[in-house]
Length: 444
Ligand code: SF4
Image (cartoon, rainbow, N blue to C red; front, side):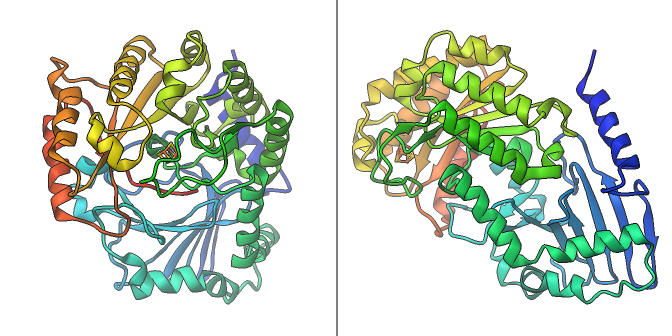
């Protein structure tokens, strides 16, 4: 039988012999000032650990002051400084395929895991709803890397390097900040828009997803929501989806073997005929050759709504469960309190939210490969009835702790960390019988 780990071994052996990638597998080049390691093997499974872990296959260049890492397309992926000025030796910068820099901080290891379910806190360059973390992008050393990484590597000496290292060096210099920005724009063009919000469950793969839009827009256009767009909800044609898949494969190129996760966009992919969802997933799985991924397991993420969840074809969940994926569907419930739903401008009844919550638990209890998580909002200004009714759902209505069906609590305000909201979160988390974490809103 062809297993994922057999295939990964094949890929690695191909890298060893494949001329256009590298003549010497995991070979190291050392000179006075630089060390290059080609085709490093990072971890092949996503893990939640309190030390820095790199995933996938990548290459690295180290100077007396910096470490830079590059993906299999020779595009910069991670960076950190080795100087004393760097905030913490276990922290690093990551560049996303959407060309954002993210600073992964330990938060002193206190409270980050309890709050996010991860040991590292992603600090973003743009306004979001984070309650914890500082302003690392104001730090000089971080700012220097973000602004000058290309200049730094361009100035490194490359004389007398063996050919394969020299070629690699040329290739990484070729990918300037401008060309990486263009590539990000190409990604957004494929689906017609940027992913303005990723499902919170994408944290399980460190947000390394391939985005495929099978729908546009959303059903409710809630007043409170900062990530919605103006598009009327619509479903993409099979032809459009197939075209996106082909273009995505070209864009991710050689680095696609470092991916094992698909995100079906946009804000309500569940509101789609089940055949369209299943065909898109199967087509993407085969075209992207996810079974050959270096990363173990295969993940599927999408958003759904109360209506799409309640109306979905009853066979869909069984069919999703039978795919080769761990599927995570995130539903925005926001509140089980009618007054709060009205304040939020969410056109739903509390009764329907209650029905959706019940159905979510039934699906989570029935299907081992599916987890449906849900979101509720948090804010100091919301009435007590919001928190009282939430407590009914996540504590009073069940007798024992549940291992799945994560509850994500999403602060309403952007760029406004509040001690009170953080305190309220910990209080709710302590009483919840479900895994309960903060939802940090991140784009791709
Ligand atoms: S919360 Fe969801 S349904 Fe409401 S406007 Fe935002 S994306 Fe649309």
